[in-house]
Amino acid sequence: MSPFFGELIGTAILIILGDGVVANIALNKTKGNNSGLIVVGFGWAMAVYVAVFISSPYSSAHLNPAVTIGLAAAGKFEWAKVPTYIAAQMLGAIIGATVVWIAYRQHFNETKDGDTKLGVFCTAPAIRSSFNNLLTEIIATFVLIFGVLFLIGNVPTININERDGIIGLGSIGALPVALLVLGIGLSLGGPTGYAINPARDLGPRIAHFILPIPQKRDSDWGYAWVPVVGPIIGGIIAALLFKSL
Image 1 (cartoon, rainbow, N blue to C red):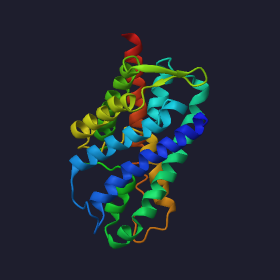
Image 2: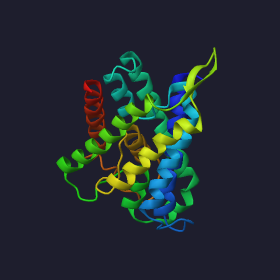
Image 3: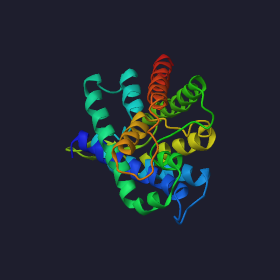
Image 4: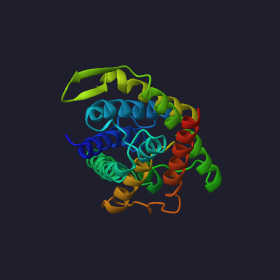
């Protein structure tokens, strides 16, 4: 599998499981309705775990433009490959969100509130304030990228064979990243829903805009820049600090 399809499939799986857990707790008449933030946090952590495990042998499992840009800024990834990775991540996110809509289509039809439907696809602030929302996304993504940069050098690796080279130890390599995302969600997810990933937010937001969802609201494009710009800034700051240490 090429790195492009590794990122596309990995990001699609990330969104299917991540947006899927939000749909399960938010939409009417689901088995998990009103399960709460803890379930969402663990659901997204497992989404990261599975997606990283699947895609890491093929693309190193960035699954996030902030990770891709942060690694490039830290000198651990080629800038020339950044556009290809981000394109794959965005397309995978749109596909993943569409799959969630298909799986939960009856429950979208049973849910009348437009904000709830939008919330399945993308994030929104608990208290709307562009500066403070942006600052929260910067801080949360800084923690993510700073942690990932240290994990790269500390997760055990194994030489599978000469053709495949060095890759992570499968589930062991994926687990620290999943736990990192779990910690961020439980600790910093309250103000903005911790997008910490431009593709995770913008891709599904585009899907929400395109899909024929009944009684949906607008896609809140006025806020859409925050979960894109904030994570990129946070990732770059983390990379620059990492390089200076």
